[in-house]
Image 1: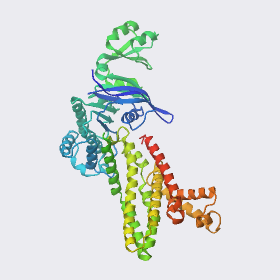
Image 2: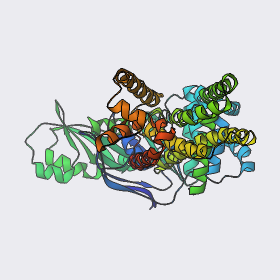
Image 3: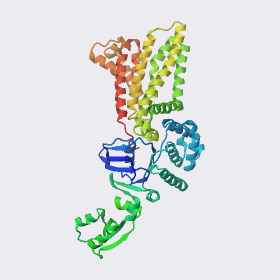
Image 4: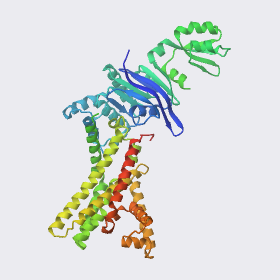
Length: 284
Length: 245
């Protein structure tokens, strides 16, 4: 059982009349990669900003210990009067990193994320978007974060850089660090994450271990029939109505009970879930 | 994060911003050239008086881009400013700007004072006028700061200057009448509460007025309003959030 590094308790946030996040409750297990998935405008970035203290929740709270937190925004912006090396020096000063340790640390980290160190001599706003993103990773990794929060980790990155960042996340996990990724690039996230949290229209829909969800569950499609809703809910609460029938995400061990209940003729098909199907099932 | 280090970081960021803005050099240089020109063409005394009446503008110009520019840019959504530390940065930055403008003004004032003392052209009253000018400067900074929550790109400064232009035009239009408020201004005598209030309204748009000998008694009033604005600004920063860009 992993420790919890961060816990969100009933977080809510409104922008005027729009409820961006509603009673969001979830927790981040230590030493794991958790993916935060949701469609555009689902409330992912607002939730991240609430966790990071950039926004104040209208209600609820964020519980986190005295951890070092790193943050990489979707499109990082830096003060346009500062050079890369100056921002790095400020970050090091703020987190008590000794000056003499910096060059080696920068060399190691730059290698991991394929960042050209010569760029540090220039103002960050003159970098390409991809290099700004890499610089943001460099700045966050410099403080050796216990928890790294990343909004859209692969935005503006080329395929080799995407691979480097994926490897980086796995490396952080091996070191026992926690990574929290907000993304809608489901296929990329699926390769690395341990746990998923899905948010849709401001509501947290599910938090689950991804392997458990994929290995122990199955999608079942069946025809519309007279249903005993109580009995169906007892079998599984995750049922959606489609044009041709119903689709249900159910634990494999309950398949027999479902077949008994429905009778074989109504049961159309069942298929193994992947993250994309799971994601679409929950948000559509 | 140790608060001492976050203060240092805020100081460093602000200092580098001031140094990197070429407009600051041009303004300071322009101001010094103007004082030198007046000194050369007229007298040291007029140059010193011009300095005392104009240096509060240094505080006004330095107050551009205080809040909204930085919030909207997204640069505060950085690992340097997590857990609400962007608020601390903004508070420190605004105080630091006041200190920079003060020391800049003080340096020029000390040079002029030294020359005035050597040539026996310095009066102790100039010191009082300098303090009144600092009150006016702090007022500009607090007003500029408040306006910068809504206006960016230096438009907070522009609004103050436009207000002054309208004020001078309206005073010019009334000048021919030689009675009423203009007469009160001329005599620096405001007999009733309403005319005193009118003068405060004028000073709120053009606080440099309190540097003048005849109005210097109103400088504490301007300082009190500045304090109020600064408290308001502090409260606004404490409630500030980095919303959608």
